[in-house]
Image (cartoon, rainbow over the protein chains, first blue to last red):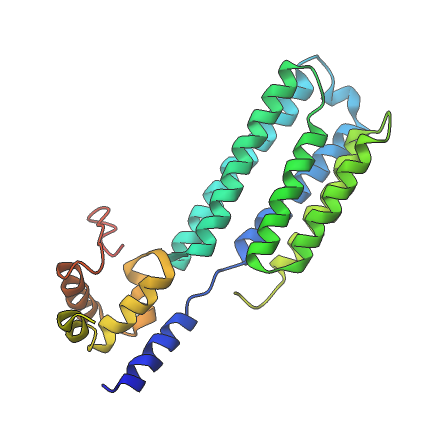
Amino acid sequence: MTKEEQLSIINDTIKKTKYNLKPLGYNLVFWGVLIITMSLFHYFFPQIVQLTYYSSLIYWVAIPLFGMVYTTYYNINSGNKLGYETQLGRVIRIIWAVFGLSWISIVVLNLLHDSNPVQDILFLLSTVLIMSGVIIRFKPVTFGGIGLLIFTIYTYYVPDINFLLVNVVGITFGMLIPGLALYLLKKDE
Amino acid sequence: MNKEIEKLLFNPIRLKTISFLMTVETCNFKALLEITDSTKGNLSTQLKKLNEAGLIKIKIFSEKLSNN
């Protein structure tokens, strides 16, 4: 085997390594649909969600926790199917795992201080979206994150804003639409 | 390059394996089979040699999942 043949083998093999973007797109769409549906249900049926002092808390903690279990299972499964994990995939996985833990911390801290966690969560989500978009070099996710960040900062200056509608608008443009664009993308990087 | 390593990587299956593993964090046996276009027996032999040379680390999770 000549040096040229060796280089050709190395080059061809490296080209076969692809980071599968579909699972990230699926995760964004799943969470986008879940959060938007939950927000709209809460908005239109507050008498059900806010039946007792703790019912809305259970609603906003228990369902997302089930979502976390489901997406963790989905991600493990899709990773096993692919058969390998790229360095890029590992970085994205760690970022979103840290986001999940931070989300739980924010909910608990806001609960203890009797305040609404929506703005804090959206702020954190926007930074994670920007990071993910930049890392995978996918502009819709980056711009979705930037849009969400600007929108979240704007909500701090609007008094008596409805946080459920903030959730719907922010998640639709920051997460659902970029997630759909990523999920429907045919080429992997 | 170390002569022994150079000799080891002269084999196309071993060269493909090392090139691929340099770009990923972890990889299972099934994926390596596809990447190297090799047979199970041949790949096992080449992986054993790479493992003995200390170039790769093999983890076997269970008997049922031994292809990982």
